[in-house]
Image (cartoon, rainbow, N blue to C red; front, side, top):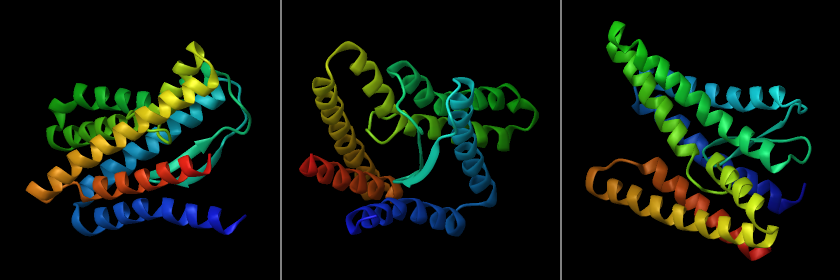
Length: 199
């Protein structure tokens, strides 16, 4: 592995390390457990989709914000779309179940539902390394040639990163919140520009 690849992995792990430290230091045990459960369920949704589609077990790599599941072989656009959406779908299903039974244990189940929805929504952003970006790429690639699909996804991803960055910086400035998302979007932006320069 080259020096550039090693540094790429180190940089990719920083947001996750900061997020974990922040959760352990500043959040309650209940919130930490709810977030961990949402993330684990999300990744299990991806892994289950590979199994149901008859694909070999994928590789798991660290990436900005968490982990990235990589297929052991090239997937068709349809399978890429299904595996990308499997994680958020698992979160949405869990959120629905939590809300269904929320009246019996309102506080914690509502918290769990909120965390499930946040993990699903965050991963559905059309940023290339996230599930939303993978799903968008699969859909666009079905409709047009590879070069145009890459350009559409690249521009959409960049606009989304910049938009979320400004919103999170606004929250950070006015309310002292969203420091993790601000940092995460900055990392995404740097990696985005770096990839563009190397293409």
